Image (cartoon, rainbow, N blue to C red):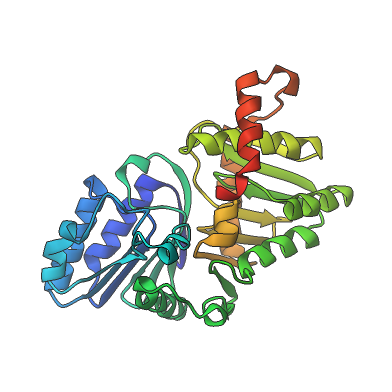
Length: 351
């Protein structure tokens, strides 16, 4: 099977560990959060074994997202020949501190010049029950292109400069489009997201853990609703970041006022995807918040590939079936939540 999706992290981890165990040539793993726990420890053990047998192993973690670990946790892997990098460790000097929020939020695993994983999941056992969307692709050409992007990110991981033009170049291959974003540059992911909303004729479905939307996105939503487009936004009822949950609910009340349909999934939902008119889709690492849209390194896959569309549609249908429709009466919202939501709205660009 060329494409396979995973909506539950435990299933994703099982497949990933199986593929890593079979690797014979190379393993490239890029993640925002890596925890040295039941899952991270098992993966580390496999990477170490593979490196000792001559497999090229490169591991890239974000220094803030993976702040609880260091190279010491990977000493056996490093001694076995594996390359371990932490993206942009910050020093307590002014120039470095200005880059503190510019994190590498991308998630990729690339194996043997053939197997690619792209999606929303980190390496964290505590998230095993989370609802995610991770895609496994069996295609050497796509793997080759993603591998070159990984190496590029690996090389700049210890620098504070980036070639914005090169790092945001849009690549199309085998009917798929790979989009990347870097901090404070023209963002192909955001542009593509807005273009998809603008061209929608029937339905827009968005699934994301955070929906801290800016004015331009709201304006595009309003335009779509005026055209008769149905907008469905699926969010987690309980968010892993409590303050973001307050902002989610405040901004979803605003979205509901303009006619959007809001759904709250009962458990933590961490997937990032959009489906337009049951035809075009986008999946990957980007949250609908200011940090992902403007200050972080992200990667998304988009297109109208029918096989992937069916996987996305199946995932969304199940999410909506299991979610509850948001029909909260604004007058019944606790005063505490209103106050906190209004205060957080003033600093929403930090989320």
